[in-house]
Image 1 (cartoon, rainbow, N blue to C red):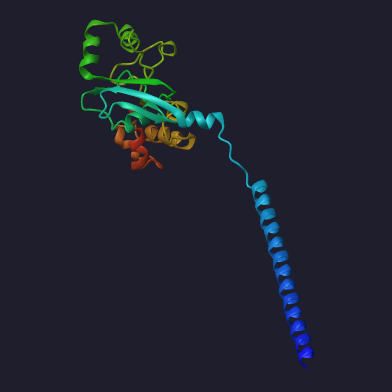
Image 2 (image 1 turned 30 degrees about the vertical axis):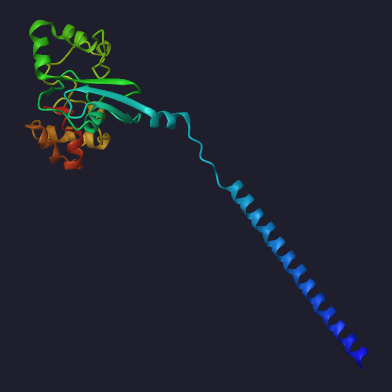
Length: 230
């Protein structure tokens, strides 16, 4: 009886060991299979998710710097994109001071990397007016030996300078469709509406009157008011 009991115990222990070994092997195979599937999914994800490459153009846009000096509230170096214009940099610099004179500045000119913008005071412009011929005065004040003002109107393309009060501004009473479209937020449709309005109303009496034109509200006016005249 003792021998039979011993054999039964050995058989039971052997069966338990076999079951444990089988279960362990099954779990090992299961987890190994799951690990391989996870690695395959991760590999597929890496292959299918596109890696965005920053083009040289985008990189340039992010690194453009413009130096603005003179009669602005916060003269400094500001980041800019290729779509920014002189008026946008002035806005970034906190706007013009009460002494600013932009009569010889092209506010709608697009900025470029390392550009220098100088906003002159009324006193500086007045002093130049009193002593120099208009064209010579603009050339000299914009192209001083120590620093050139890149924001000035290109003299090579400007054979006839307008009066200092309106130079560089778009006259909404005389501008063509093409000239009006150089203004921010003004496309062909709005440009035609502006011309249609001024023809029906014998011209604009104030620049604020342009807000009566369909499609030009307060938001658009705020962006163009420093670029237009009558």
